[in-house]
Length: 272
Image 1 (cartoon, rainbow, N blue to C red):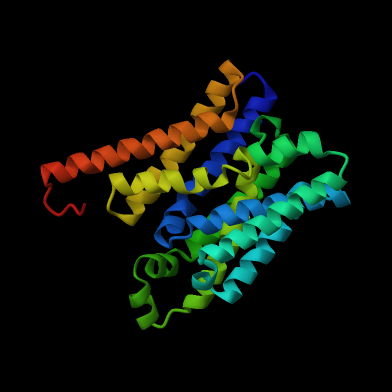
Image 2 (cartoon, rainbow, N blue to C red):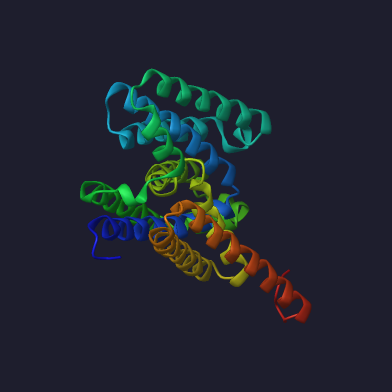
């Protein structure tokens, strides 16, 4: 399997993206922003479609649309955007735009499948270096702001009382989410990006009560899911995304069962 360059590139890129999703996903879940990760993926679809239509790099379109939308959501306020009607309107609008740009482009057939479902095995070395740079930027920024972000994500009232710049932390995290979604779309596609970004973190909450423990477990589950998906896809020719999402879903349900088992045992200090 590793004798092929495309599999080497896929494992490198997939591992880096999984690590990034494992880390940022814990804060996405803690801040109840899963719906925004889903929204960004649809906005990214429109951005990538627009980029192909005008002859740009699809990643450039992804970044442009998702980063601008992150700034817009940050200015409007996450609570306002969380309304079901607002989310539905935005998703519908950008899906419509994406379909429009694809219909005007002469590359719609191959590109539609790639952007919607991902194409990790089609990544070349140039793409790998792009992913390395963007993933490193996300992780380094998260590390630099870890204390503030942790405080605001898990104790927002305390963070506000301590005088932390809550609004700027929120906008900064939305921008990081937009960047992470743009990178992840290349691995699992726009339709399934939220699975890699939220499901491992949701499963990790079942296995650990500490924030650092959640980050470690979430990252491990995300990486294992990508490795499992790539390996199974190589030997079966089935889509990579199917195996990744199946693995992560299984990990989540195992976590639910484990938490239920602990609750039944009434472990001291465990909160159901």
